[in-house]
Amino acid sequence: MRQMITFVPKYVVFAVILSLFASACASSKKNSDNQSEDIYKQLAEEKYQDNIEYSRSPNGGFMLVIKDIKGTSQQPRNDLRFFVYDLKNQKITFELRVGMGVVKWMDENHLEVFRTPTVVREGYERDDFITVYNALDGSSRPKKAK
Image (tube, rainbow, N blue to C red; front, side, top):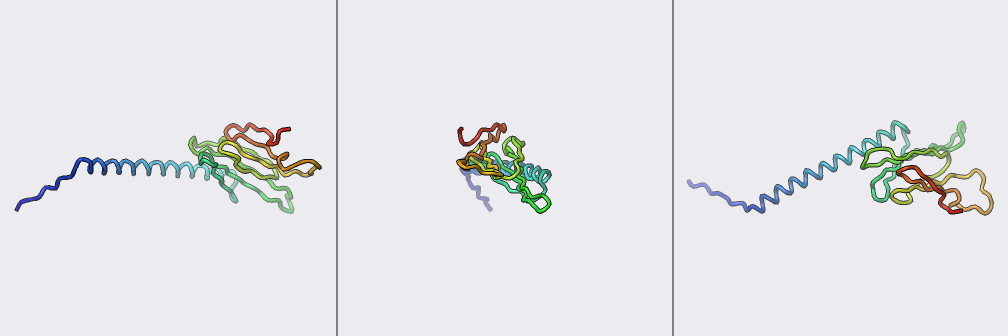
């Protein structure tokens, strides 16, 4: 009997090799993202134990890790703590404790931190109590120019 030899065009072999390479790169990136996620979650649990909130920056390069402790009868004041984790460089870039307040992303590199005032005077607006922080270096400025 005669065996048939099947001819496989070079471009098919090239396409198969290329797809295997692309698949390997994609799984490598996924593993890297998972490692970064594991690190910031581990740091959050070490610092804050439980009831942790996570907020990814608009472009996905940073993670805002928030612990908002509600007041109790023994400790009536709320306590807001947070840090910013750089997912690419795998490090904390900024950390703050503000007491009562709210934190959220303003844009990719800036946070808005609203500090709840104990006394609101006439003529003040919400923006008077907001500070804008640079998530990369912690520098700050008031949101509302005086």
